[in-house]
Amino acid sequence: NAGVMQNPRHLVRRRGQEARLRCSPMKGHSHVYWYRQLPEEGLKFMVYLQKENIIDESGMPKERFSAEFPKEGPSILRIQQVVRGDSAAYFCASSAGEGYEQYFGPGTRLTVT
Amino acid sequence: KNEVEQSPQNLTAQEGEFITINCSYSVGISALHWLQQHPGGGIVSLFMLSSGKKKHGRLIATINIQEKHSSLHITASHPRDSAVYICAVTGNQFYFGTGTSLTVIP
Image (tube, chains in turn cyan, orange):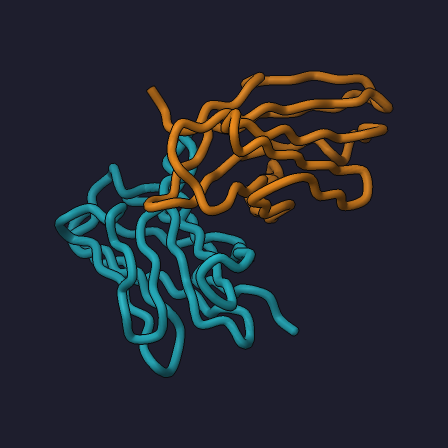
């Protein structure tokens, strides 16, 4: 029973490019959460999704960032026109439902040059 | 002021010592989580609790809803417990503490 998978584990993008981060939840989990950890800072909530629905995006920057969790396939966090300040570790977690324990993926470390 | 405050920020202990990390929060919550982040960056969920006490091996987590306070205890600490321990709460929103960096010296 594989855990939460994230890919890529490391991603390097030049300023202005797009970054796509993927998260495959644990088998049987239909809820996905994305978190960002900036260098030397704590974790910050970004967005909470169920299949085909965004439940809470209160932590998402208003521009350039979007997330989806389609009926089939992984959840995608998309960052358009990346800037140096987007360099961070992006973690996703999944759960079986609201209020259930979350299981974290290994993270994607994004570096913007 | 942060919605979730942890103390201490840094903690160094000798192997075998009993360790306590504290977490206070100022918002209404449905659950409180204790997470462990190892030097490599990976995050493990240790506990999710909304009342009382939970125990896994040498780890114990307690929560006092009235006082809005939780503690994480590690008994018989070991160098492999060295990590950052993060308190997080879920309610209307998700809030994280800044973490407690624990180093256990052999």
